[in-house]
Length: 438
Image 1 (tube, one colour):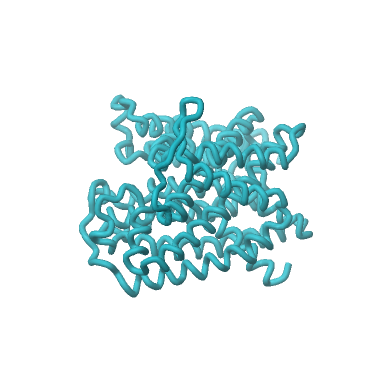
Image 2 (cartoon, one colour):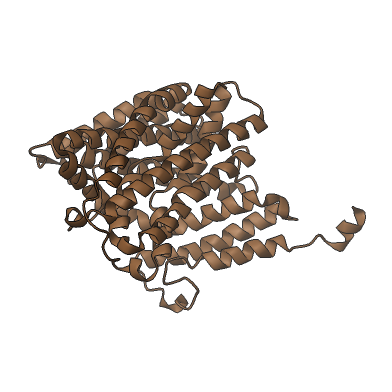
């Protein structure tokens, strides 16, 4: 691959990750963290940058097959859960919603026109925008071999240029002094930042995008596994650097937003108010372009990855049929309110994230295990059991019977048991008779 291809691959990876959650969560977290912004941002970077980077490396190391040591039924169910969460259930509709709320709605004089269909109320402008937005993503996803050129070499450079302008203004023209911390950011900003990083869903997405990138490399003629790993790690590092830059800017924007952030219930409101206040109508156009491109590139990557996965599971239905079906489903689900969609997704993420994090670590440490198959199954089982505790607690279910567990109150009851399980597996020795034979 040429240098331009390698840079394009890195830009494409960055664009796939930079979507709705990456834009709406950091400003609000920065605003609430206030004087504790540094610790909160560090926690956020752990789950929103470091873990996705490690996941891409694990995907490369496993050549895209991280679940082969799990029972086939478990591997299939886990794969379905990941792709449904990233696909029609949460991530894709959320991207369409954010693109509408921040990229189109501010320019409407009246967006309240609604109609009823099958007992469901639809906003006319939102529905039309969702259909148009996901149609554009569908058309680009129909040709996965062109993604490196269309996303990596065209859409992402434009988006990066606009993001640099926005970031420069944040540091040069802070709107107010950094205020005090609020809520959980007062007592445990680091842990709260880690949990906020879950909401980006980027560790889940990294498993999907890693496989997609390997497929794109194959289409470009890179068939050697070592070469694929080399290029994937380069792309991951470029994406991590870009994401860190964006998060640092948005955290600082939220922390210095002052009165602009008053009453905001999500970071999208803070970002929109800031740009309107600093740049007026021109700034709103700038923000609308950035948000639309960010969400569109993420949707293209996820629609492509989800459609390829479901085509492998159900080969009788063509890849293109799944692209159309996914796009139409997401356009429909996107008409649920943003706040409602986020509140529904949080308990699911608290349950599934520990399992994925555990899978990443056991994949990276695979050579340290005497019996990798047993270790994978044991560690992921522990992570799932304790992840369910955190998920049920996030649902509002009374879990006081286990509130004695370390990190339970912070929503990370899974961490210590899973870490102990991994370490225990590393100390398992070969049976004496097997050592004698060797």
